[in-house]
Amino acid sequence: ASAGHVIVVSHSVHLSAAMQAAQDGDIILLKSGPYGTQLFLPPFTASGKSLSLVADTGARVEVGATVTLENASSATPVLVQGVTFAQFSAISPLLVVRNMPGAVWIDRCDVAVQFEYPFTFSSMTPALVDNCAALVVHDSSFQGAAGTQLMPGGDGLRVTASNSAFYDCAFHGGSGGEKKAGGNGLQLVGGTAFLSGGAFLGGNGDDGWFDPGNPSACFDGGAGGDGLLLSNAASAKALDLTGAGGNGGTAGGICTPGAAGVAFDTANGTLTTIATNARDLEVSSPVREGETLTWKLSGNPGELAFLDYGGQPGFLDLPAWNGMLLLAPPFFMAFAGVVPAGGELSGSILIHELGPGVEGAIVWAQSGFFDGTSVFQSATSATLLLDQAF
Image (cartoon, rainbow, N blue to C red; front, side, top):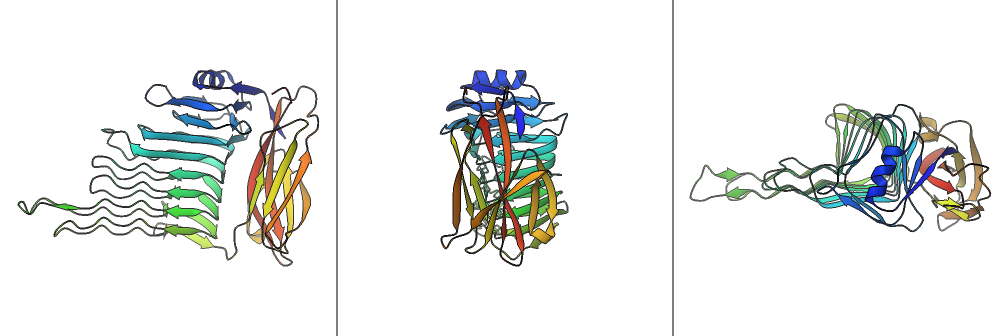
């Protein structure tokens, strides 16, 4: 497992100090509470090191200021888990991940901005990823901001020049500002991606406007955003996706209506479809010594289910296994059982002593299934194991 020093924080001042003082590989355990707003706090930044941010069991952690993870000097993996990044009106993205040579897993997080902050004059995408070697996102949602003034809606998430994998996530572009286009649910700018399950929705374009007393004052309706936009030769493999483009804005008098967006825009990229359904994995986290870790696998009835787990994440495309291998060897492969008629298989594991001096350790997990003919390497999850002192 990926072991590290654990730092417990309970409010924004502690979080800022913890991120500055923490060393590469440390784990920040977040207790319940709001963690600031962009208008009153500088960004929370970890630069030159890899830090994990994990919400405590049952904690509701709401971060309203920008969190930036950047320029890591090592390939130490990062886990961001159970955090809500939310702001009603934002002046900059809430989550920025860039220049990370190691794996970054985002698990069970929500990132949303309702509106761009007035007079910023830029579309607001709440989460940006750039130049990441191995981004893995599971069971998370991303909501782009609605445009204000004459600005388009923001994308839900924009990923640039990165290798990424997404499992059962939801993406929604923001609606356009005055007579402007809606945002895209997910935009991939170059790089590669694997997409399993999830919903991809474009934002609606704003309506046009026409002044009958001034024929030259004609404003066309804004275009709808795309559910998934592949640009700059992005390449993606996908299975079991649902999507819809945003509606185009109405014409407004004799003006032109906005074009509707499309569910999956591949005009400047490549999308390869795998003909199977998504499968899922849930693992409880955090779990302390003496407590019980629970897991649940979701697959097709009759399939053999496996729970794979290890100490380090990996990133390897396995076309023969209809997915990605996201664990680095050596890892363990445990037979979990045959998926019953209800499609879900669950179990529990008692967590024993972690060992002398071990404050916390992250176990990286992935699900696998076999239907008698084919292997399906599927969704990921992770669990933070804690010393009982925390």
